Image (cartoon, rainbow, N blue to C red):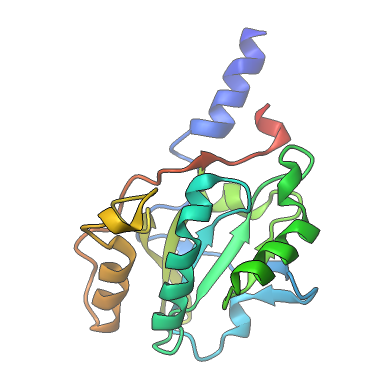
Length: 198
């Protein structure tokens, strides 16, 4: 039993897994709620991406949905669109099925792709542990470089209390050709639901 626990703990909490700031991120191909397959390579004109692992059921994710829509509306036209990915296994989190994703996206009027990480392959590569968990990627010499990892801002549950907008500050810096001053913050949210972690 102890061996099993150690194995699960390593999968869930090992900080050596996933990307660090400065790493090159790999592209992925995932199914969008419209049934089409989406890759970052599809966005020829993008300067980078705000990749966020999020879901339907986590109250932290729900509390950040309007913020994600606002980020997409503000930065998509400037070259940094939001790409949302649901990393949860619907067998573990029933409300996070592909069908439920379509319903939620329509209810909220998502302006960005909402992709399903079928088989939970992409989130471990990134090293995401929470929903929401943000990775800002910057295109440099045809490579996707990780420039920021963490939270959207400093008030995960209540937007009214936000004092520091981490994602906005990072993208604004990148648009000026500068490095973000804050590149790594703690993602606060629900643990990603994956039967390999149970």
